[in-house]
Amino acid sequence: MTVPRSEYLSNVWADGIFAGRVLFITGGAGSIGSAQTRALVHLGANACIVGRSVEKTEAAAREIAKVRDGARVLGLGGVDVRNFEALKAAADRCVAELGAIDFVIAGAAGNFVAPISGLSPNAFKTVLEIDTLGTFHTLKATLPHLLASAARNRNPSPSGLTGGRFLAVSVTFHYTGMPLQAHVSAAKAAVDALTATAALEYGPMGLTANCLAPGAIAGTEGMARLASRLVTDGTKGEADAATATAGRTVPSGRWGTVRDIADATVFLFSDAGNYINGTTIVVDGAGWRRPGEN
Ligand code: HXC
Figure 1 (cartoon, rainbow, N blue to C red):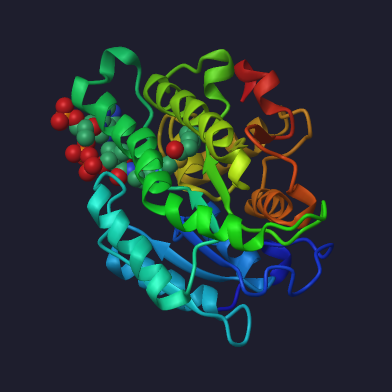
Figure 2: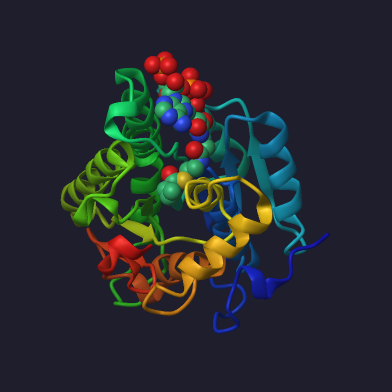
């Protein structure tokens, strides 16, 4: 079944704003990543999705390509972000088949809910390897292509065409500390630092590098993992009730949606985001300001 536009994109964006642009995304078959990809493809981009599962990645690519006639969406499975050579090969294949890499989203992440006492050294290391090292690998593998895009699309006018955009998906946990999320908090703090440094090193060449930090987003795997700790007997009905109740404690009064994240991504990659660099856009309804209640 085709996903209606209203689920992944507001109606404020003009069709075709990303025509001729190519997105490279890790984690693009996940709930947030596929909404971001749908939105950008809907607005004219072609895309290359990389992921660990061949079946899931190829199915997502086929599904996302349906959002626009003529869209080209390449699904490259069997790529683990912990493996730099595999990512580099995927980036090169994207350029060979789609002609460029203008936008990158480092969206692949690993998570589970555990206290520090329940984290083995390997468990902690695994999340750092997926989130931190994986983001570094993604940046490093795509950087030459991003810089080429930035050089091609550089325009003396302040609203020049976009290209050379790097976006890492982060969290807000490390702003306050977050029980049961020491591994993710540590990993994503490093992702923020890495991304800010990329902005400083490559901003002069036209690259922008930012993070996007979603709050609790309904219908995602991260949310399902969070919900599983809110209930004791694990029944779906209780999980739904628990998450609905908790959503009301977000200052904006609801959980986030994948469309909230896709819209913010479109903004950052559009001409309107040209001067946003080296920062984190938090899209969480002010939830992180009430960490104890979410
Ligand atoms: C404690 C755990 C654990 C758990 C795994 N480990 N699950 N420790 N509590 N619940 C430990 C294992 O025992 C092992 O350590 C180590 O972690 C590695 O586990 P593997 O299963 O061998 O790793 P791997 O197959 O590479 O899988 C990685 C994974 C897995 C992170 C554990 O969950 C995964 O692939 N996740 C990808 C999808 C995902 O997580 N999406 C959600 C992202 S949401 P030992 O010592 O036994 O060898 C997100 C945003 C935050 O990131 C959302 C808010 C909640």
